[in-house]
Length: 360
Image 1 (tube, rainbow, N blue to C red):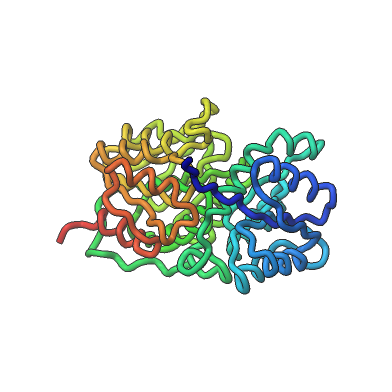
Image 2 (image 1 turned 90 degrees about the vertical axis):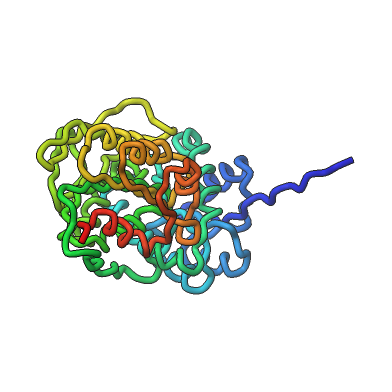
């Protein structure tokens, strides 16, 4: 009789100051095949539980008395690096502190529902279990924790031009999911304004968070970045972040200016906004230099988009496994055979600039 090895269930520490919420979350995870090895009532207890149990993942509430989630993430990443999934309130204030936690090294976040929490959490239980399992597989050691911004918020200086100048009217489309926000910040923060790119960012993220994400990118790079609106236009040196819950398509491109439309069409690859939707529309509409980059994330969104950009004559790149928190989307993009180069995060800005540099 042959036997197959069984895969160990991910071990989790559940952190929330509400005993009720700890119970709800722990029950959902246990039912989904995740073993809850400890429950913590605040950040300090979470730090101790991580040191004692060495879990695969921590779910972390943001606002807690005593040590809050942000400080707890920072201490965990310093002493015992462990993937952390933040559980955030679906509010503007929740978005601000959640991004701070991501900057400290948390991998991703899950928005707590409003209303009757127990009923809503039950409705979203499959999504929560999927995210916990995905985050549990993230690599937060070595170069990845640096790439994710753990322990600091410094952004790399803009890269030096690879040549005397750049081609006219280049467009960059960036797609990311789990682990993506800080990585997108690093990439855009290293691109000089002189490259005159039109930048489109599709980050899998709820509606309440994309506006705040756009503001962070605007603060941390030389480009003017804002959240996309239906009919919005951008020219050189400007960028748009896809609105959470809406697909972003390029509807028109004339004289170096892009116009986008937002739609509530059915999710593509189970997500909305979808990287594929934006990349494919760019491949169809943009007839000037076009670059597509797929960054860290779970799933396969972006693979079809990368193929479309390559077939349209554009340049394509994917983040490598060593610097990706979750090597799902980049792997699937690379498997299409349509990625020019698979590179660590720190090499991606120069790669983008090299392919839009004027020949000398």
